Image (tube, rainbow, N blue to C red; front, side, top):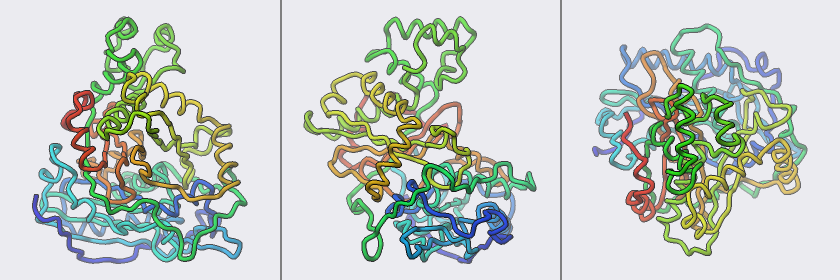
Length: 479
């Protein structure tokens, strides 16, 4: 792999085309009980690798600057800054201070080598983003967004860095998709407006106190790590799902019965991967849908088993699989799907190492499934009350050597980021919030329920995972 050095060509500030007050109706947006814990987390860093545009780089930069300014008109909070008032409440001040726009160059890099599925993710991707290892609390003095466009020999990478105390993954991709939609120029009115309402269960009178100088990151960030993308096709995940719902070997009567039912109703077996297109009557005849382990839960269960096995931990030790969930649709009444801000909570699932490694996939999958299903309106509200009793920052990290944290989502519309000349070739992230056991789930480029897992592990654990045949049998090269 060539040197990953990236040179900065230019940097400027982009402001919204229109003043913020006319859009938010509020010059201040108070951070919620879901926003505040993220102040000790790094800014979110996600970006898209694209083929070289069919016009000059100068024209591309012009289009992107104009589109970013227009997008900020609809997302005025992102052009603001954080402020803490005399009572200790943290707000986003929609003051049109603007965001950073950076043009960079790495023409010694080309698409094919940096996307090799047989190697670790190269370090160059970390240089395609601004605000490396910057805590979200820094939004008091730094822009809340930075967009970096890096020119490669045969492509461009558009990296978007956004303050995590201001957006979760849903809001991040809403903004990024809107930016691309405007640049593509197909519409003069964006299709999905953000909801800046703050009259929700997450709005609270509780105050989060910070140490002098602000919060610190909760993991070291200096330990040696390896990072790989593992690709899972629709067919592979179907096999995992069937195995998880039928026991350890995937060949019992339930498995055969399910395939017979789907075929008799005119479905190809792979259409069952997400459980969305099946005949409801036929499915209920096989298994109560509420008890079904989903495709993603099946994949998470296999990852939990294999990573825990690769870590070679004592069987009596406790291991935790932590999963971030979107609460917008879990609340009653539901939040607007495009509620702007963080509306997430973390679900920890705990078991002994011996149980995770020695019991079958169904047991692990069922444990994860039950926790996710149980996280309903009442659970969300209890979580808010619990935080209000003890306001605290979100502790990211692998504190006991036995934790896995799953972030992002294969449901996010990452490959909808078409800036006008085709969908992305790949999605990649920067160095933000990465530690041993941090996993991020992306949709596969081919869609149809395929999934890419961005896996960050210690070198020893990664080597063990790569030699785990139970895990690797489901991994494929991306198309």
